[in-house]
Amino acid sequence: MNPVAAQAQALFADQTDGQLTQGSAAAIHTLPNSPVGAMPSIRSGQTTISQLNPTQYTPSAQEAATGAYSAPKQQQGTSAQQPALQPQQSTPAPPQITLAKPPAAECIETVPCAAAKKPAAHKKPKPKPSGVPAGVPTLDQVPQSQPSAGQQPQVPADVPVPATAPTTETGLSDQELQQRDLPPLRGPWVRMQRQSNPVNPRDEAEMQLRSIESSYSPWIAGIGLINYRSGSLGYDHLSALEAPFEISVPLGYNARLSLVAKPVFLDSGQADGTSVITVQESTTAGSSLVQIPQPIGTLTSTATTPPAQQNAVGIGGELQLIFPHFGLAGGYSPAGFLVSTFTGRAYWKPGNGPVTLNFSRDPVRDTQLSYAGLRDPSGNSLGTEGQIWGGVTANQGQVQYAHGDAESGFYLGAGGQYLTGYTVEKNARVDGSGGAYWRLKTMPEYGNLSIGINFFGMHYTHNEDVFTHGMGGYFSPQAYFLANVPFTWAGHYNTRWHYNILGSLGVQAFQETLTPLWPLAADKALETSMNNPMLPAKTSVGPNYDVRSNVSYQIGPHWFAGGFLTANNSRNYSSISAGFSIHYMFRAQPSTATNPTGIFPTDGLRPFAVP
Image (cartoon, rainbow, N blue to C red; front, top):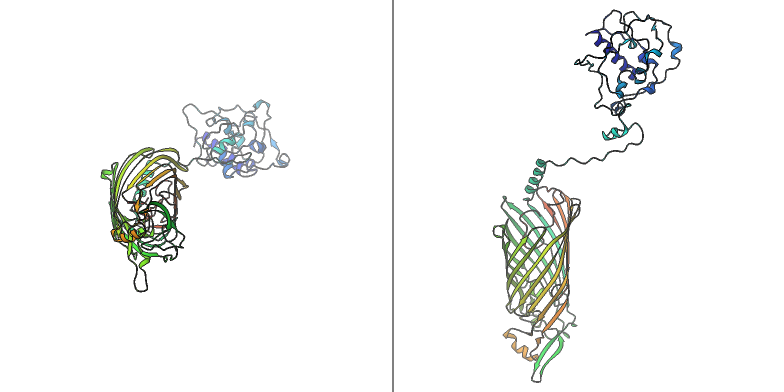
């Protein structure tokens, strides 16, 4: 090692000791790798580190953050304890050879700036302390020299180097320290709010892949719901309790098999003899409108002999095979009802295009008569039971064309039904619908709002909206028209709550034509004895409302809990439904603001993938 490098090493070693150990700068350290010969003395104006004021030292940002720096205490009586110094002969100053000149603020790493910048002419020469062997250099004897061009200084590896150069003469500012997430030297520490790192395309693709994989999960579910319809007790009033249970398994990635079991309990209440209807009687004197006690079956004296309460209990089921754009289902209406039959449904969306075809065979669930059938109370006795009638089934076909996307679109549809029942007059229906929708507002943090316009109309061949023998007991006007404005809010709260609310306001009108009270030929004698009563023609116009809501909460990666509520006055009665569901997914589901939502249908075909 050359003499200049040895002098630089002595300078840095002595300074480091002075920062970490109190009073260590006053000690003399020998340099084993330095020459033994006498070193030329530094200019007489140099000041030793032991005489510096501690406030002249400013710690670096790294030292302030780690607590490695402790300011030395002021030494008491230093001048009194120092040995007598002998004056040293003045010699010409050698050429100054030092390290590359650091920025002004980095004077803290070598000699304090205040001491280094003072002119040597105003300083008195400091004699060398007694007892120091000749030829051993001290810190105040290290010459200050400038390196030649192209020559890099040699810095010992144990000397810490600041990460970045400070922008001020006294070190990093408080603002710069806080930007580096370090505490400031003065004032309170305000932590910086930093944005999270954006998801890179690869991670996003992996998340989407996991979401697709999890959508093919098998599941089991239990549902509980209650339906309530307004009406006269014992007639068109209905309370229905259902508790479906389902299990669904994927068949690879192209099909899904679902099995649904549905226990059902129906109750129409106990007739109290106060229900009356208006009929048109025809006699030789002419026709007139009169009020009579509402008959049921062939029983006409319901005011004096109210019919016994009837209810129904049964278990139905359905097996469904679902493909992405095609579905089939077959099952049976609840066994245990007075009238049961097979059911089925199918849908097809060719090429995932705008046209959808739907076919179904389902019971008409307006009343207990149309859903499960009733017994004629006039034929009930101790030894016999009255004849059964009712249990209406609608065989339906429908085609719909829809064009649009999530922002806007329109749709047109048309369909028809052929309705049959047990000892019930056959009926037919045609219907059509159309409308459009637009998305008004999208708020990614909460959801989106859509609004639309909807039109619907239908026509039945016969009016069967009474409970006499041969009638089906369901709403079947000869003309019906509905125009409403629906709005839909589909939202979420964080990533676990998902919900949607659909509401509509509009106007509806229907018309019913003159219809015989007993339409079957077998009851012609009874009809004649009652003066040929007929249901009079009727026209009604009024407001319409419809509210539907669904909510789902993801309890954990494998569990969804949901609830729903619907209320409307469509047709000629008011109805309300409410219920809950619980689903267990065999594959863990991601918790996101989009999919899966966990909002499952409670009726009809089950979805191909986890919704």
